[in-house]
Length: 211
Length: 187
Image 1 (tube, chains in turn yellow, green):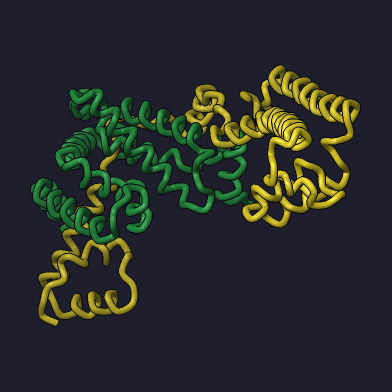
Image 2 (cartoon, chains in turn red, brown):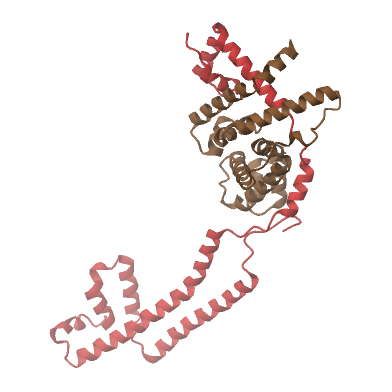
């Protein structure tokens, strides 16, 4: 190997060469005086860089660590975790209100369709009303309109709601489920106020004297 | 049994200041040496080091524990030093004004030579372009491997090697006189 290996000498000096490259450099150094001279100069430079001291001594490690501890600010909680937590809080009332809107709409639509059917306004279009004695009006309508788009679990849920006649048990049934939703919202409100008062700061425990 | 760095990082991420203090003790000397060689001023270097450790503490929750902590910390330190330098570009070499740390065994003449050499070395390092200087100080004063430097500065390994080659070649030119003087002393 006659070509000089100047570009590899720094990496050789730093112990960064492995395997074939390392052997190539070592072999070359045994036969090339110019590259050996180059390597010696690099060693001298490294020695010079390390033997020169800073103009003033640095603060000793222990003192620096103690001083830094006094300066360390309180760390803000992790933003992503907070976002998830906050959005989870709002899922509860949002879900309760959605359920309430859904049940109210279903009841109104069901009443309207029943009334229109009884008055003969729907004509043949109301034939699905007689699809079976077990099916409520809202259930028949949902199945006819959205049946093909519904997933298996959605169909099962609607069938259960239909079988327990959730929308057709009159005033008391409505009163019970509306009161239930109201209760859920009240419980959530109480929990949320508690969370706000405590500042929701239980997730990142601080140890040490400056927490 | 000694606590591993990964354990300390995990504890510090959860807010444990004692664990973070231990990380500071382990890395302070390396960081302050690197930062000093970047900015050539002891007071500025200590300010930058303190700022870097505070930044690291604040950003620790977003650090991935499996990543090399040292590379991450030195990246913050280098960036902080460069920011401070840009804010105070008039920083001059302090060797000419401030008394050098003295070797108690060496005589006054030796101390003077050492002082001059230190000033020349620091001047030469400071004259390197920032990108090259960062690679050089991380290797020479931080003791980082090429891989760690590549991670710290977000550079390909080949670029680390070429910048280091360039930095050393340039320093050899700039410090030719000092190097030959040293050689004659050793003969």
